[in-house]
Structures are given as structure tokens and as C-alpha cells.
Length: 104
Image (tube, rainbow, N blue to C red; front, side, top):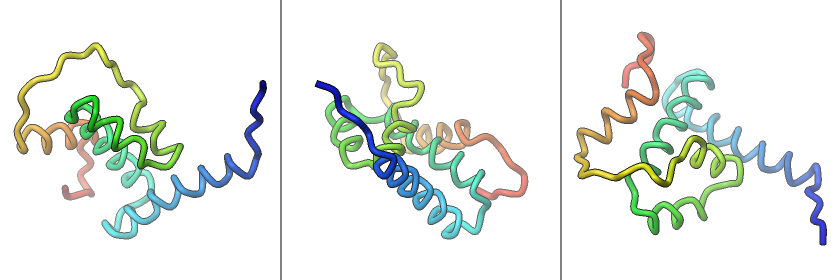
């Protein structure tokens, strides 16, 4: 049995992802590129911080394209370690990259 994905479904997924980026950019008064980089960094840090069960629960709540960003580059074999709040913030910042005009 074959399933076809309609153009409407793809367009809707793209609109949802763009809405997330636009809202983040507006809330932070940033450009879309910086907002996207921050969103990606936070998603990846959350993914790497959560237990497999928590990770699956969160991913099930995300829009389709955002879920793809969430799992991008994920290595399930990578070991976990004890983490602190400070480590979380550092990981987000490192994933985001430093940009002089953006104050995190």
C-alpha cells in the first residue's frame, strides 16, 4: 500500500515551522536566521538532555518539520552524562554560535 503526501500537507508543515521561527524572532526582536539557529540549538540541547522516554514524548508534540530539526544529527548510541543547568545554557550557546549583535 502506498501513501501519498499531498502538497497541502507539506505546505502546512512548512507554514507551522515558519510560524515558530517568526514568533521567536518577533519575541526576541531578532532576524529569522538568528531565531532559527536558536530554535535548532535549544531543540538539540533538549533532545540530548532528556531520557529516551521524555525525548519521545516531546517529539510527539512537535509539528512535523520542527520534529525533523529536533532529530537532525541525533546519535542514539551517544552516552549520556550528569548535567547541570549551567551545562544546558552552555550547550545552547555553543550550538547557537556567538553572534556579536545578539545578546543571549
